[in-house]
Every structure is written in structure tokens, then in C-alpha cells.
Image 1 (tube, rainbow, N blue to C red):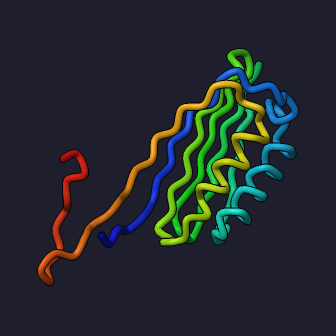
Image 2 (cartoon, one colour):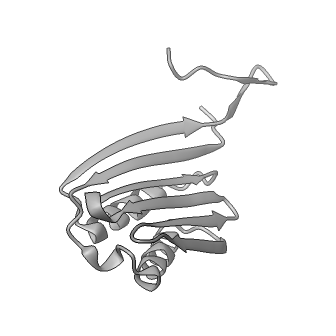
Image 3 (cartoon, rainbow, N blue to C red):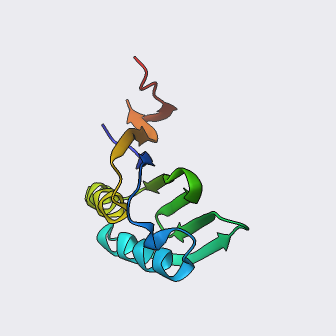
Length: 129
């Protein structure tokens, strides 16, 4: 089946490595490592820190995006990576990000995105069947 991308949505709970919470530079370095492992092309990165705590980041890629939201007090992180690349390296990138945060509970959702070719025409295919 031809697809236009892979999307991984991850919820991380009980994250133990606090050096990423509320530290923009550490988070930026982790995201840049994640981009490299995903074999993606960085366009730009934007990180916003909130008061009194919390941090959010979006990474624009030529292939699509990465986003994460860190909830310091809850030791919770939401993370997603979406790429139109046929390469499976986003799964290694996801694993790296999760391990770096030291999450004790992880919930992953893997989504195949895209329009597929059928009989020479283009249509949306339901992946729910």
C-alpha cells in the first residue's frame, strides 16, 4: 500500500529525567538529536516556556513536523512526529526521545497517513476497516 506518511503520537508519564523540564536549551538539543535520528531536514524550531512551569516546542521539518508539550508538575509529556518519508527511522527517533525523558509509562499510537493509488485513480482509503 502506498501512503504519504507515518505519524507517531506518544504520551509519556512519570518522566524521571527532569533536565528537560523548563530548560529550553536541553530540550532543543534533544529535539535536534531526534531530527537527526529521524533522518529529517530541519526547517526551524520554536520553543516557548511558560510561567511558572511548562514548555512546548514545535519543529518544522521539510518532511512534516515534531511537537512536544512538557507538563512539569505532572511529569507528563505529549510528543508526536509526522513524516512523509518512507524511511522507518522515525520509530528510532521516537524511541530515543522516550528513553531520554526516562518515562515509566508510555502509550504509543501509530498512524499510517495518506492517499493511496487504486486502479490509476486517487482516493482516500479508510484504515478503520
